[in-house]
Image (cartoon, rainbow, N blue to C red; front, side, top):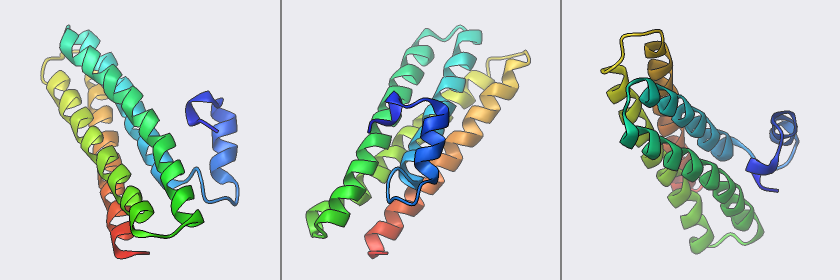
Length: 146
């Protein structure tokens, strides 16, 4: 089940189910994607065409990584070997990298805004930093074999 194919209420129900996926990795990626959407909004008000395009790319990448994280974790549960474990580390690290870029875009936009949208840019940066922090934590947990 691709997370980008679900309505919000369906996604929330899927996350809350007693199943291994989707879980924190997918939620972290989606948090980063939501932050990217706010970064896009902020870039629009800052008249930053490159920022708009990059925010869109990052949002799409983060949604894809949310699905990839769920698939990687399911594969690891099905066959616990070094290759599948490596994917449960690589994907959250990639989520963190993308979220870091979202935070940078949002901060750049915030520096060029003089409107109420500054709050959206700051929210984007905070959400992106939180997503990056959680993703790195997940990678570390998976690296330790927890």
